[in-house]
Image 1 (cartoon, helix red, strand yellow):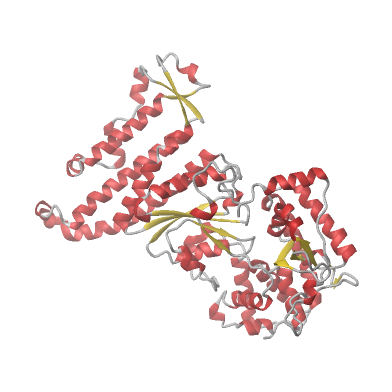
Image 2 (tube, one colour):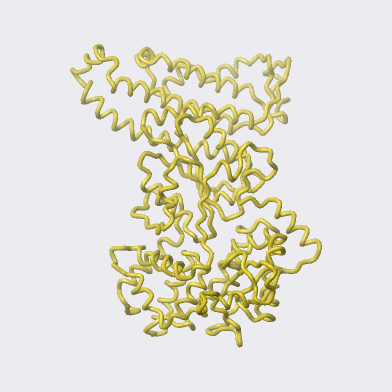
Length: 571
C-alpha cells in the first residue's frame, strides 16, 4: 500500500473521530465497529450486572456504544460518571435517579405519540362509541396503563426533586401546626391535576390515579414540614413542635427502592423492554462512595421482578471497590459478570492480528485490508516496535499508526521506519504523565518515585526493556504494579514464569513502556532491546527467561503505604 493512498486520508480522519469517544454520543453513533473475538457483546446482552475492566484505550466506551446500538429488547439509560465524580453518595444516587426518570419520560412521550395514532384510528371521531362496548379492548387497557405509568413516573420525579432539596440530616416535628401562610403555599389537588393534564373523565376511568395524586400532595406536605437542624429556629413563629423525629436523607432515598423496582417491572410489561443502566468510567467516583452506590443499585436489581432492570459499569482494573470491608451483602465474584478487555503481550502474533483487524475495520467501505496496513512498514522490526509502543492497547495503536503515517509523509518516506517510531513515542509520554492524578489510587509521590527508579535502575543501569519481577515481591507491591500498569508505564507480558538464572523461583515478566528508552530519533545507546516474542527451536522464549531480575525498592514508610493499599484490591 502506498503511504500516500487517498484511502489512508479517510482512515486517519476516522481514527481522529473515534479516539475520544464519549458515552453520551450514543444517539449520534451509528455502525460502531468493535472487533469481538471473545464474544463480549453477546455476554453483555444478557440481563446480568456486568463490570467491564480495561486500561485507558482498551475499548470500554466503544463496547458500551456497540451494545446500545443493538439493544433490541433493552432500553438503555446512560450515565457518564465524570461530571458527578466529586459529589457525595446521596447526590450521585439522586443524579442517577433523575437520569433514569428523564429517559423513561422521554421514551414515554415517544411511545405515547405512536400509541395515540393507533388509538385515534380505532376510536377517533364517530368511532368513539366503540369504547363503551369494548372496555377491555387492548388499546383501551393500554391507554389506561400508560396513564398510570406516566403518573407513577411523575410521582417518583417529584419525590426525587423534593429529596434533593433536603439536608443530609433532617428534623420533622411529629405534631405540627402549619401556619395559614404555609397551607396556602402547598399545591392543591386541583393544581396538580392541571399541571399533569388530568381531567375528571380520566379520573373516573382510571380511579387508581386518585391514590397517586394523594401521594403527590403528601410529598408537597411532607416537604413543607421538613427543616434542617441549622435552620429550624427560623421557623418557630410558624410551627409548634411537640416531638422531633430525626431522619437521614439516605433513608428517604432507601424508601424509593421498591418504587423504582415496581416501575421498572411495569415499564417492561407495557413496552416489552428491560432497562439497562450504563455507567461509564465508574472508577472516577471516590472509592469510598462506590460500595454504597453499588449496594443501592444492587438492591433495586434484586427486588425488580422478571429481570426488568440491571446495571453495567466500566472501569480501570482494580479501581472498583465493591465490598472492601465485607459489610455489604454482595461480592465482586458472586454478583457480577466480569469482562476484561486487557490482553497480555505473551501471544504476540494474535495481538498483532487483533490490532490490525481493528484498524482495517474502522471504515469497511474503504476496503483496506490488514495486509495493506502491514505493508506500510519497511521491516518486520519496525512493525513489531509499533505494537510494543502501543503496549497492546487499541487506541494507543490507532493514534500511533495515524501519527506514523503523517510523519512518514512529512519526511517524504515511502514507508514507516524505526526512526519514525522513536520520534512518535517521545510524544506519547506527556499524555501518560497527565493521567497520573486520575488513573491511580495510591499517592502520586510513590508513582513518581517508581518512574524515577525505572529510569535510573532499569533503563540506565540494567539497560533493558524487559524485567522479571519476583512473584513474592510482586504480591507485596501488588497495588503499585497494578497502578503502573493502568498508567501504561509497565505492560504485563506473562505471569508465573521461570528464570534461567534462578530456576527455583517464580516471576512476572513486564515490558517497560517504550516512552522510557528512545532518545530523539534513535534508541538509547547500546540499549539491550529484548525481542521477547522470538522463540527458539524448542518453542521457548529465551529473551524472556534470560531477562534481568529486578523489583522496586522503597523505604519502610512507603512500603507500609503500598501494603495498606493492597488491602483494597478486589478486581
